[in-house]
Length: 104
Image (tube, rainbow, N blue to C red; front, top):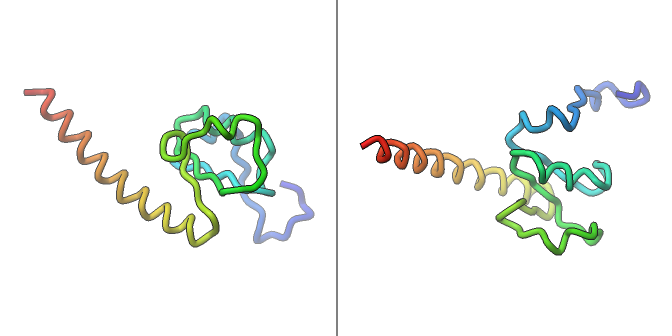
């Protein structure tokens, strides 16, 4: 991290190679490289994308709810994370139930 940042904002940098270790990937305007979303869509994490008036050439091909989830502001992001957490617990339970039926 550049030393010009105040200590409160400094943290460990996560390379794109290690980004897939995290369940969620956040893509916001002004805080990411312009081509980052394309890379994030290629790893096995849930991509949380800020709604934006600026678009890349491939944005029209994206389908919210299939390859990413969108939010408007910080409050929308918090609510989205709460919903995703509940859904992931339900899906985990269902996948476990499905797996146990396969063993019969």
